[in-house]
Length: 515
Image (cartoon, rainbow, N blue to C red):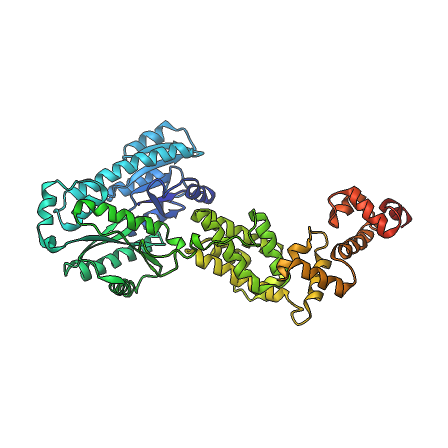
């Protein structure tokens, strides 16, 4: 990734530029922002970015003054000027400082992206040229193989393969990937790479290379068996002790010649790209089982057709205090998503939606009682940024179960009282005996018998009676009949008329006039 800093006195524009442009897709990383020239100079003194994106007119030190100072100190960053003024004189002065592009505000996304792509090409050529000027070390040759710069028939590659690695019978790529992309984390990664080089490369056990965004460890005569690989993985974790963020480790297939190294690399990279689907802390190989394996997915009564129905069910489980059913319910959704080959983003979005809908619907009192050390927004952010599917599901399960236990204020009462209380609070929803049976872990026929025995009424008759009682209260408040019907759970107003007249002996309109 090439580095970028954004300098503009307008906070909204700085934020907008960070979110508007797909920086990572274009091969860039925004490492800092500044509100003016002096602040930008302080950043340059610590780290010189590859690209400077700067407003030409700012209070204090403007963009042109900043450029003049940067060039005077010999800093050769590429520069894109932004201006709200179509001013030829400013453009002319900017160009004398070696500006790559001069763009007018408001910023056009496509135009800025095109300028960045052009700069990326120039930076890549410069980087490659610098690499070519280096001695043809094993690290450099490995870089060439992975980047496709050289083929196996090149003479220097043959010479290298006949050197100290000649005793290697096989070659195998081990890739280390990282979650972070901030500048300070990048520095830690490079320090970790140096530690690995001292450990492996110095003793000719392997070759270590930073091949962004990964650390590559090329091993010859790889460890034997699962025990050997587990020992190597443990060693890597010990060496990474100073890292303040997580890493994933993946192993490519073993190959027998240098020109096949790229295949081992690609295998490992594919595993890292799917690290979300594995348990945290595992050494990923082609044999490592994913957390939710497709062959374990079975059809169940809980399988639901869409996310709205899933959210509906999760909220009900929380609301009725059925904490014990939440984990298995969420795990089944995860299994189903994996079986349908949903990708990482789709699964994140699905579970974020479920968590958000439930948190949005519960009473604020429940959240304060749950003991979660933060606001709902913090919880939802943690959900969305969970790095592994198991962590994602478990994080939601734990909080939902806490909420359910708080909602279960009648836990020592019998379940029929809880059920009746639930109906009294949710009479306007599309309640069905079959759905409640699943929530309360009964068969629908058994729950129906239990309900009749406890209340003396069949479920539907009881629900109609509660709804009509609520309807009478609303009619007394002069609400329109069709509004009352919808509020108490009858989508068909004619059906509401029929039920009301059957139970009250008169139409809702007549009842309202009487009142």
